[in-house]
Length: 490
Image (cartoon, rainbow, N blue to C red; front, side, top):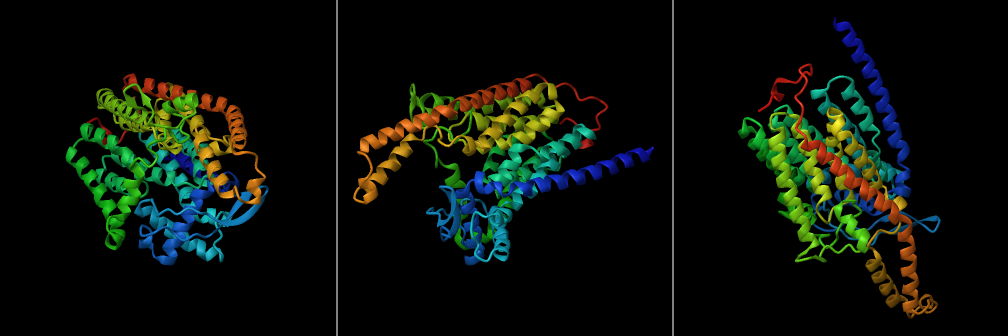
């Protein structure tokens, strides 16, 4: 009786190893694309922070900005070696600092000149995200396997490995979102298994990677209301804070609470508070496309758009929380659905939202789509398309909406600097020069705005479809599904 199962597991192991090797090769093939389609400014910061940690000491990351260093920039059909004139104290939490330090050590060993924005630099500093792509895929498969073991879980692993928004963000954009997602996905798995202390440690590690871990507070609030015993949920939450403090201890001893100020206070305070959205196709992007303005301080009636967005978010979270507790409290799948829904609300309703916030939604929405395809698959597919459009926007949207004030300000600065130079004297009169630039801007915007409207509508429809799929009461779990004992309803 056991032999077929062993054969099946053996075939799956061979297939999983082969697919994993193919996925790794695909990630490696993509690395050169980061030089053309990536975000060199962010990569420059990561590398310089890593070099600072190696050269000056790990604990100096929150003391001062890193020194400038040579980087390669593609300009006018050729590579140029310059230095990025941008000074930023490390604004990533301590665990990310450790990862940057290790990458910096490897980069120093592999590159004698440590030139930034090369395949070597991207390979060294994207390796954590590439590794975590595999960990996220395994975590999504593990979540599905709790309720639909076998091939649904295995196919989830295969699809997640080659999921375009993830590998584009990890390799081409060289960001660390999947490093955060790796801890969060397995945190939810531990919560579903009733292992609250493990879940608390993973939440603490998520806090130590990126400040967006704060978006998981509603998820832990849902667990506190629905899970038993509650004291273990509380202990898990307390352990998360303790884990963060332990990880940050070297920095705390060196420079006090500077790590907290730069990693959390500055990031979560309104650094971009006056911007309606940062290339995120949410409800506020409709206003951006309509007005060509990013100002969140503009008034809608008696309140600013920024304040309206906070009211929308609070209303959505409170209403969604009540719905989740009412509909899903007797079914552990509700934890996955509330994770997807609450994170989606954080993406769609506030102003000052980055495009990459949607990535954190997709693992849980994707798992939910496998468990309840008739309800959630449409929303997952639509939002996956939107997510890929959002993380690739620099490749197809050269001029962002609402950027004219910044362009005009830069032109005014250039005119003031160059007006007495030969280059400045050859320019047309200032008003004519600005007028022509304005016409060019409007022409560029006219080329891409239809695509932006399309993706914004898809985002709104995908969100509505997801909410509609969550509102309907969950069907009872089939009796044939093998669910571990600690997943029984609270």
